[in-house]
Length: 370
Image (cartoon, rainbow, N blue to C red; front, side):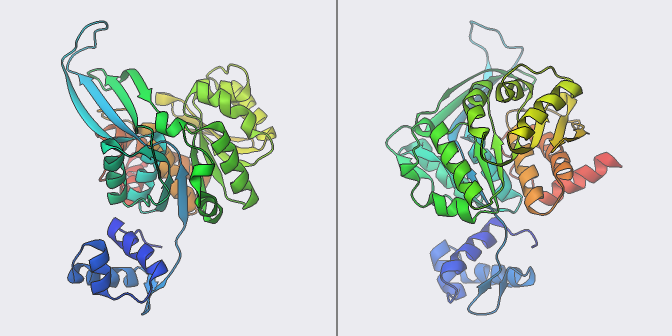
């Protein structure tokens, strides 16, 4: 299906439950105008997303992201960062969290996406939900609880590289299976599920088992070395479509340190394949990545970029990969598109580049290959 705008996706979701609504009723519910909705309905008909009155909605692939949603506070020093002293810097706040970033990235690429996460009943939580929903992500299954919304503080040097980060993830750490309610049904109906390793291990286990029972492919982002060690035992006995570690995280998943060379990475990936992981996509920073697809290893090059902020690169890679996989691309092509998305994202100060869409990524890929 042709890519839908965030407003068009909102209309489609509304028509799934109330197909007999007319343009004025839709406008009233969305806080829009009848003329604007009429234009959107006409566009949806041309794109094949709906057919006739009452509007028959043609299903599009649906991705569910289960993970963290936090508010990011970033400080970038004006000059080289000095430790143990105050540094002149520019500081800004933006919505973040690995899972939330991936969900927003997918929605901006035109993919129908739902987020399952936890936020607090506070200013940051409300701001996170409003921003994420405005980007086109469905946030109905985000848990609003008593714990403070997660916060991540990052200090970057003048070149955009991370100097130190600190996080308060109480809301995410407190997420429970019991809180998720209808989340099981949402996972079971998904076409692809992304799990951010920041969530508690028992929630990850529950999600992996639910997806396995319903043959839903899962991408697991291990997030950090510590989280990878915690997630490693969960890989036994359930199929996982893709894991996305860096070198250190790969070692934690495999149970022993891994050297950053192709033979060592291939051996570690083979050990994960034996445990049920179908694809191991190892990120190597400026050296690109290696994708082991059931033993067939492909080397993928990173793309040159004018770096402003590196913190959103990995999430952009994952979003582009899942979007492309859901749309029918091969894993290797999807991973290559992920590298292009990362290069475009680090050239922008936001965690999720707001003007990045699927067409821009594919155009940039063609240009870098020519």
